[in-house]
Length: 525
Image (cartoon, rainbow, N blue to C red; front, side):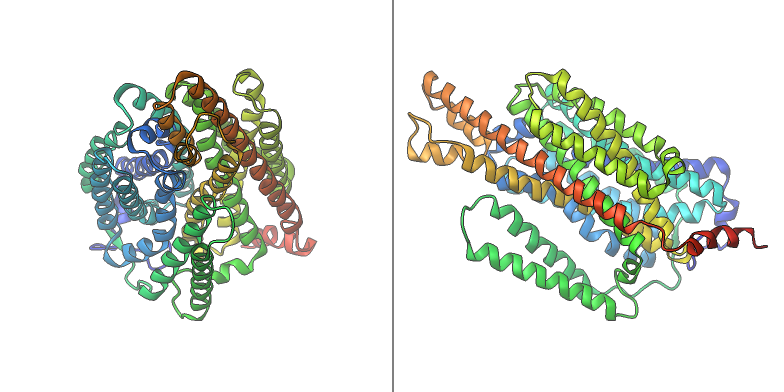
């Protein structure tokens, strides 16, 4: 149990919780994380169908996809602090209520702004759920070995959910429509609410940290400004004063946020942890790797459907080699670390992922799926090792009494990586598509402008065209989107190469003496 954690009513309660109830609690919190992970990627296979119904622009489409993870990342630490104050069980169950209601509202959305708003609500609910689950595990599992096993299961649930999301989304979309990818959350949430209310013990921190509203506002507004500027940059060719103002204002607020945290006695996010180069490097590795992985999952799903003509289910199935390899990488990561050490296991896995992304950029062809299987497997394997060892390195670099803060940063880095990965690489794809779509003979100026907004917009224009013109526009749009995907894969490869170089340079042992100290400390009675 971390310092300051205590049950709400009886200090002895966690010690007398039955074994059966402990694992039921773990089942509840792990299912919650599985659900949050699924919602991160379940919309990927449904995007083409959804886009035909709601007609979002390219930027709006990116907002629909990653506003969930960005909202989740920006609120995790805040919700964790609130959970310490009001009770973690209350926070988690309230989060499930918000998540369930938002899921129903998302399924019934019939405009793009409505869907974006409900995705924000989903992110709020998921943040309320995820922020307190690790603290609940630490309260319930008082035995160190049991707790390590429980945290391992809990951690893997999110990655498993994110990996399964595209396949589940494809299966559900093809059978019941895109809205059903959200509606299936509702019965699961109802079951968890009933079971969780019975088995999860209430706990809170008797001396919670101060909840600083100014810090919350700075972090959320600053991140929103930077991401808004990134997304809008893909829509505009040239310099736009509004985009520059949003980027500058957002960056300034984030700078002020960091500065404020360093001065507060009880910061919302303790940046002193980043003074340890192993901690900061591992965090960057997680952000870069998970961001690239989630972005590739999303854009591969679109690429298969929009360029290759795959059905939603077939697109989800096409990603299964990558998903299976990711699971293998996660489970074999400890062996790789024991064999080569964290430094070279992380560096080699990042390099493997980078090589796979480069192969997809240089030789990827939806018409020859068999040739895509090796790079998909390599990408999944490398990402699985990095995500597991990166998360472990973050926790190992922090002192035991600061493990709760390290866990919050670990969770935030995964979600922030997912949101920024889709935002940044999506902007690159949108810009490449817009500039790469040539003028098509037979289109009016308005039709040409509409077709340049996104692939889905081009499909809408097709309905107004004679067959010969429609064939030319289809070929041009597919080629432009294919170029956009090449840009995405190439950019991901570059990010991963840079991250691999960083890991090799910054994760080196400090001195032989420093490396021997932990072993000597363990041997000391």
